[in-house]
Length: 501
View 1 (cartoon, one colour):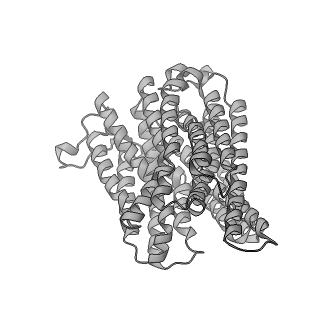
View 2: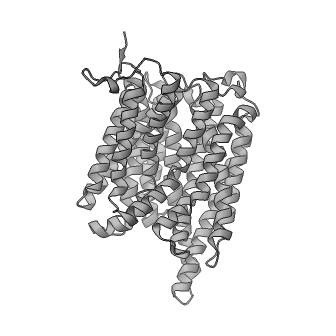
View 3: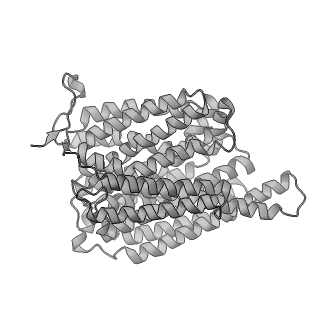
């Protein structure tokens, strides 16, 4: 007899789940709670970036150390996501969701109260670890809550819009909190979000089954070590260079460990990542698309944010607000694509078109110069890129999680997040190295001065935008080739969008 994840004995009636199955009205309250929980994870990918200068000044750490405020979170989050997904399946989605939200909020409070660099880095790493519990539990709960095809399309459209736009929202929120309150509020804000999400989760989430914990520890060790080595190696390339023995050694070690992980999973009795999940062609393709999107998307946020602040001289708040055209286009197209277009056309042409449009947006950004204007140079690219990413995110997350089965929903839900995080970490390292090299080449042999440095910065940004555009273009071609024109009958998942059945 399986045990059930329930509220603690003696908890107030208002905080007990009503039934074992969410009612129609409760499902939308559950969606609201899941969106708040997802916002905590997504916002922290960018909200802290805009607060870094103020945090550095307050705590007195060096330029060389500041990358670890971001990297500590990414390393813990990306490397532990598969374990978080498996724990969600084994322990119960509701319980893992509540533990993840509570731990994430507590780590955020500690980080906000940090008195030194080490305390802040540790808090960020713990945030990432609890985020690795939280993210797959959120998406898994979403997948199992909305099993009606019509409701599923609407829910994933809203959720995809939030997930896709959350990074840009983080820039706006980070700028406002830093400028008008204090950089510490970029971390404290998670506590407020967690309280609201916890009330909704405890009140409305139905109990979920808990199975005897069987954890594939060899798989945990190899995948965590492999992902840490890859992400850490890419981070080190920023300072040491790609040819440095340390960078090269870490990347080779990461590749070997990840290959070892695949081998371990082929014979494990309770694999951390059941390879049958990726045996589905549509699901494997969807996860590859999320990896590619992560590489290119971070170029938009990172390099365009620097361009807007350093070249156009926008304040932190206005720099965040400047991304609103992209947020609006992304949210609109994500909701429409998943609810209306995915059932009719399937993922192949939506993702292919979305990737091509995102590439077009990056090409527009690559035309920016020192004298370009926001309205004429930046806004068109934001709208085109937002349109493309909106088509991609909702469709890809729907396909990546659909039909995984009750026992595999947590792991299947972790994979898109892993793709986005690893893609973002690798993309940031590679593109930043290329941009820096292009800027240094531009200034070599020229008379130094503010005008030259601004032009060099733009040259580096343009290089990053061109490479990111190429990445999206490759993604568009792969989507056209790898997705089936129409889903095969064997692809039918429970609760998949009706038009794809």
